[in-house]
Length: 399
Image (cartoon, rainbow, N blue to C red; front, side, top):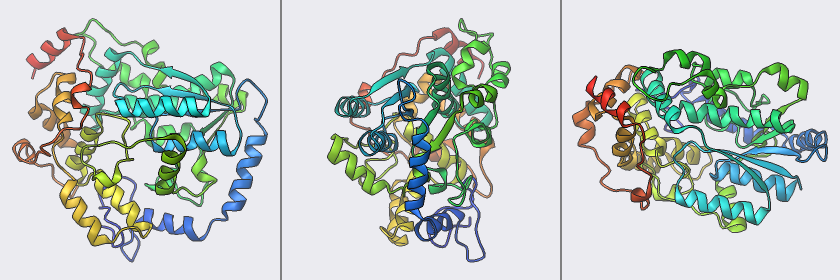
């Protein structure tokens, strides 16, 4: 498999390209960010955008908020640096962890903000998890789409035309580059957020014959991007803070820890030095494990590559961390299999067709012999309530 000659990202990474020197497109984007952008000018552009919305309604903007490092920093920056009054909108994907919740509560009370918290129908979520795992090798469709679509609906319902998100994708992928102004719009949503499956299509894909919870189009609204005519009529802008100020995760984590008492956490498949990364979800270890099964790399490769690009880690040091942490079977997989009512072999059978060449998915036996052999401290606190036992028994009987 081919790897970037500067960082450790492989050719199987989505959207990645290599130049004639073997350097990946994300490394080149970060070089552009450090050397070619007038960040004072960019910040001036942000001030002009905000001026058009400040004080025009009950809230100046919406901040979509998970409670992770990026959304927490974004909220801090808008409240403390820009003196805005935001409405915080949370889409609860169903797997929020205790430390994350404590961080969020502390942040809300310290900054003094109003919060809109939405939790979708769990039975719908379970069906969507299984269907997107089967069709795209990614069980997070409901999370991807809900996080980016639901705040847009709140924007319309509450008449708050400005939404401000966190980091640009140019920092980590090549769907967009730093020389263009990425906005969180319908084009972006349909290009890669929804994995090529819209909510209307999924209604027809779901098996409603084995459940007391048939899914209808009404159930899918939180995952559906609002009509563009309505957003245009409102004058909606949906922008990324990281397009206007230089994004530096290490410095921003230090800031929110100092200013807000934000705490990191253990995450499966990630070295302790990255305790700030993806602490929002107790299924994160499964998500990263699936990436490794499909593409031959996991979260640690992604993280050390960021540090290599920013001259905080050597390539050899990063490679050792990848060897130690990527690809270990997470304890969270057992909970995940319980939620969906499937066996581990069936899980592997669902993943295998989505492997990206030249990587080959290992066998179930090989994976089971490569366990991490530890559990996050809050493992026993994760909710195990499943709900639809009839669906579980019928699905398992059909395997």
